[in-house]
Length: 112
Ligand SMILES: [Zn+2]
Image (tube, rainbow, N blue to C red; front, side, top):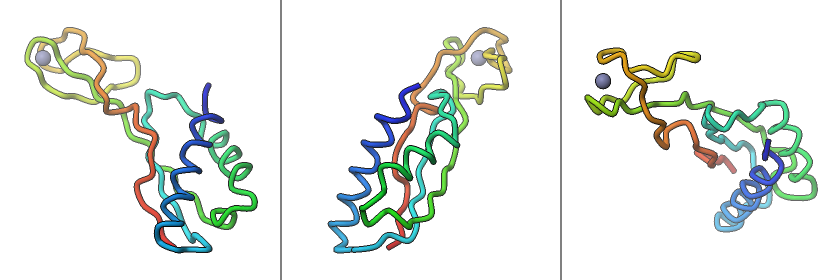
């Protein structure tokens, strides 16, 4: 997994956002994590805490919102959620292709 590197990038983004708002302390950060990344919530939290030390993010509450993966059917173009290991279109019963939904790793909101 690449949690560490990715979390470090988000921390940098969050620090920049805090600086733009001239905030010396951040109350809460909400991040969006796509299911397809396979990130472990506890691991993300541990890395976040580690990189947040000594920054305005140190005492911020971290809310993690997981986004389910969506697939696109190559036949009917429908977007549908992945159901466990079932990747097939509910209508055509053929295998869908991955889309960008489910690969997110970004800051959705910040309260200062
Ligand atoms: Zn279909």
